[in-house]
Length: 137
Image (cartoon, rainbow, N blue to C red; front, top):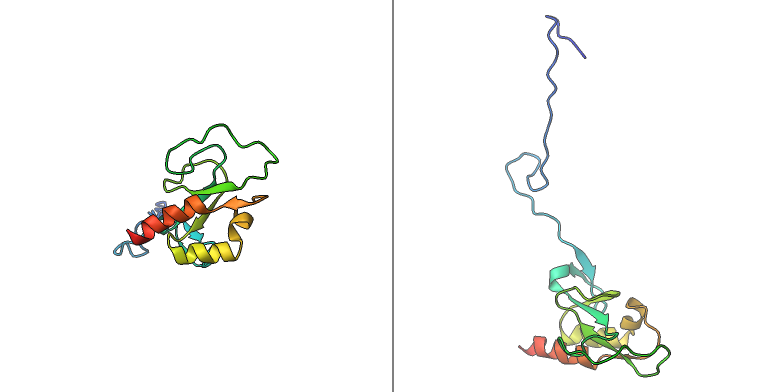
């Protein structure tokens, strides 16, 4: 411990840093938001601006409806790609701007099979219906 000339210990100055307060303490710095990349246009955007999509294994083809038992392994029928607006479905997800333009670009580039690491054919019709409903309304 350092001592002053009059033999009193120096007080340590501690600086408390809160992530929502700037360096001077006067300005408010917004917290960083999660950023994802759209598989269609390849632009980065905040997670809240994008739509998460997943492979529908045994879950909904349209919001909340169950389609029965899981697909058998090695089946040649296409795996449906569905929207996951709440972001809670299990499995690997990909992010897409909810526009028909980005959906068409992703389909043309075959981005879904790469991003979702899917083997075999994919059925984009449930996703297309969902995005068209959002894009027009």
